[in-house]
Image 1 (cartoon, one colour):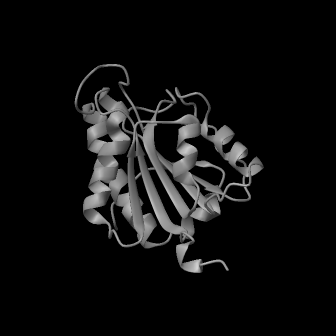
Image 2 (cartoon, rainbow, N blue to C red):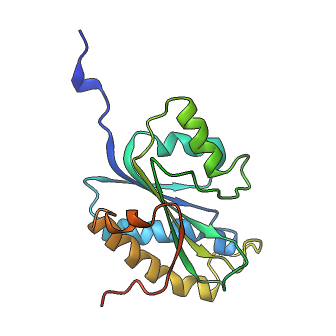
Length: 182
């Protein structure tokens, strides 16, 4: 007989900060995650600091109800420090994020679907437009550093509101202009 107490429970929320802290703005995902860890309750949130991408990300995004990924973004369409949000729901096409680690997030999500993976019902990608991803430096550029509190505030509000309002914008990139409470 199956012992149901040994079946792992689906995690409520996993927040993943991606990056390499030694490459200037590339470490912004980890820096934002650490600020969130200090502000959010730990009882229903799993925090992951990762310097990986591609297929290795699959192990961290499966098995949770909601997942948030924070990373540096390099679109070269907006100035450094611009903050972004992308909402991925189960019924929308996966976001394409270029990765230097084998395959992009859309390919990871598609592969997980084909393999019958237990994907989150909502995946939200947050990013800050990077100014410098190549210089070995333990710290972000000024523009990116100044954007961190805005993104932290936005994510805290999204977690508190259970992300319901932002799901109406699923499948499109949003620029976060002002995350401070009014």
